[in-house]
Amino acid sequence: MTTNRKNISIVFFLYVLLHVLLLNYQVDAQPIKASDNNHALRAASYVGVGQLLGPEDIAYDKKSGVIYTGCADGSIKRVNIRDIRTPIDTWVNTSGRPLGVAFGRNGELFVADAYKGLLIVSKDGVVTLLTDEAEGLKFNFTEGVDVANNGLIYFTDGSYKYGLEDIASEIASGEPHGRFMSYDPVTRETKVLVRDIYFANGVTVTPDQNSVIFCETLKLRCRIYHIRGPKMGLTDIFIDNLPGLPDNIRYDGQGRYWIGFFADATLTNATTGGILAADLEGKKIAYYSDTGLSLAGGNILEVPYFGAVGVSQIDSLPILNSNHAPEPRLIRDKHMLRRAEYLGVGKILGPEDIVHDKKLRVIYTGCEDGWIKKVYIRNSKNSKIQVENWVNTGGRPLGLARGVHSELIVADAYKGLLNVTNDGVVKILTDEAEGLKFNFTNGVDVAKNGMIYFTDASYKYGYEDVTLDILEGKPYGRFMSFDPATKKTEVLVRDLYFANGIVVAPDQNSVIFCESPRKRCRKYHIGSGKSGRVEDFIDNLPARTDNIRYDGQGHYWIGLIDYALMGESPILGTRGGAFATNLRGKPIAYYSDYNLSLSCCNKIENDLYCAAVFFPYMMKLNSIQLPAPMP
Image 1 (cartoon, rainbow, N blue to C red):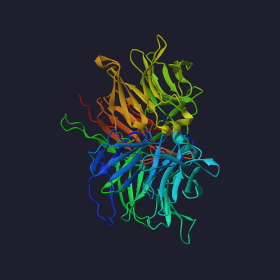
Image 2: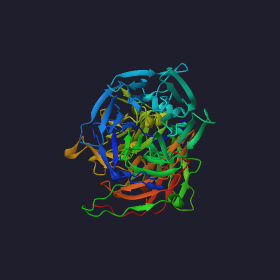
Image 3: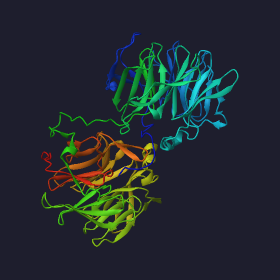
């Protein structure tokens, strides 16, 4: 389950994998034709793999052919791009987090350090603080920097309220805490030029020295501040409605600005970043992107170079290996809702998981109001769907599973792991492990031997703070087991990125669990010679994974969620839906639609039943036909 009604502007993931990209093609000095390339990684080679940890911005010394870049370990590194065989040199360490870098008139390097403030590094590597406050407010996230020909330094403070470690809180607040400023090295005066910016980021002085452009990340735009001429002191929009979240902006000396995007602008998938070239008037010239690409900034040096603080998940279906036996062709339906029937409209509020009682022909589902409801499968098209309030847990029931004695096992986000008897008595089984309380009990399934497997999506953030967990981008999830006989709770896998739905494999040798932000499902072995080992079951899925269910016919069904939040309302994307695989994790079918986000789906009596936490009903697709599962 992954929903929240908190107020945020944009959901994105930050600081995951680190590298510098070098695109292998030549660029002449003539303006390039307007073009797009959404496969930029195909032409990429990698510089400094394992040595450049989170390069954020790049400053180029033309005389020496050396790039300077600030890294996550506090070091500023030097890379000789004319001879990449030259060892990468750790030049200085600021003891902070150097982000923006720019050369001054005398060859010194100015550094916007997230923790320290605005720094100057002399040619011989001496680090000196220039300024760390303005108007009585300390900088909390010094971000971008550039230097004008007259020596005046222009820079940004991403937020005066939240620092680098609290970036999730800054985004979640939805408030403008950023500032664009100048620093005069002669008078040592720090002046705030523009206030109330939604995450102030990269900075570049225009070649005519009449203005400075800065990125406003959360508004998907760059603004231009006039420092000379009749509009001096005024701010205009330079370029907006950008296709990604802008980080740094740099001028290449050839009539083009390059803007790095560390994520796309769909508000639903932080999976495709890249770089955009604009002319001097802010008109788009070219856009280079790729799935799995996240760029902080870039520039044309001898060839285009990009700094990258994060690389997100590959956002495409796996390519099937032709050396293996042929797999069934993927069934693809992008208009799932056209064939959908809506069940229990207004009576089933935010159904999250579904469990089928074959004997009673009843579906159980947990709802937003705390009720576990019974939905009776009708005998004919003309019969009316019956919905019954069965048990209220007093919490938020998410994952459901039938126990070996037909009791219902419930993963309740607030309460923990519950047992509900056939006559509706609710009992808590466990709510902590290794001294840590569950904060977001999520998915559950039961093996034939009675062992219960379940997830705690996050031991740090609860149901109401799910957005903060995703924004923070750290692994607080756990996959666990509970033995009803010994009442022992055991943590089997730690450090999961939002642990979600669970299913025990039909052969009882493994358990598959979803890791939502990673868009994958992993397999934990409980039998055979691999017991205790974890491996990928399926990854690179089209959207974030929620629940996974086995249909008893050789297929697993994965609910895919695709949304972001603006204010109190979710913005649904285009990739949510139902995804089917065979027993080996190979794709079989993918049903999706616009404005669709499914938390669970399963094939029951030849029809596909779906639950969606954003909707007050369940959905049903009639007569779903799939290929026979591969052996």
